[in-house]
Amino acid sequence: MSEVIGHRGVASLAPENTLAGIRKAAELGLEWIELDVTLLGDGSAVMFHDPRLNRTTNGRGHLKKQTFDSVKSLDAGGWHSGQWQGERVPQLDETLRLIKDLGLGLNLELKPNRCDLHLLVDRVVTALERENFPSDKLLVSSFNHKALVLFRRRSEYRIGCLFETLPRSWRHKAKQVGAVSIHVNAKKLKEAGAKNVKSAGYELYCYTVNDTQLFSRLKGWGVDGIFSDCPQDLK
Ligand code: G3P
Ligand code: MG
Figure (cartoon, rainbow, N blue to C red):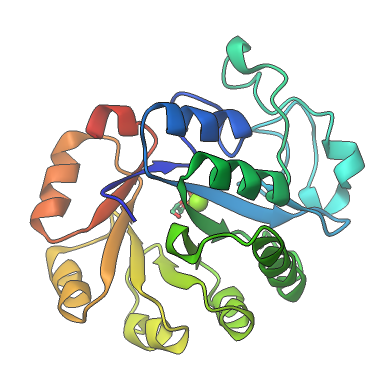
């Protein structure tokens, strides 16, 4: 991935996990972005972070209770600012197509939100294969280790293990799924942990970094890149 990765698209400038955010990232000249994928109750794969619609759309309720028909007309942009009113919750397929067309790299974070893990992995693998998504432009990650194990059984795309805090078992988990990278909360990472990850040969990425001081400190520890809501200020 790149040194500065747009978090949820470019979360400070455009609504997260929307096509507008992806276009904004390309406009800024970013090389890689991170997006979250999850399932609705009817098994549709959509780009969405929370388990509920409330924060980032004008709808209400848990994603498990929704179908794509009930979600497709919701406004997923107006909460961010009036400029983005009318943005929709995108489906995985159209998202992959746009990213591919724009030549961006994608860190696709599997967000199970209590959905069926097998179905989520199946939907993701099927969409990636259908779109013939280039393997050098994709890295799949998840806090849910089982989702990564299932994904590895189905696909050879690169994997990153995502943690809040680096657990004791990180090496075992990374090895189990053939991970190339470790992703950790910047606030929880310590210098010794960063050194261990780097000396074991893994790439190391931190979320979510929005200020230059923290960014410089992490770089000094050997961190390869950061996820940022405001990559335009850090690039
Ligand atoms: O993948 C990095 C980061 O996005 C993980 O946290 O909650 O923003 O998805 P979250
Ligand atoms: Mg994420």
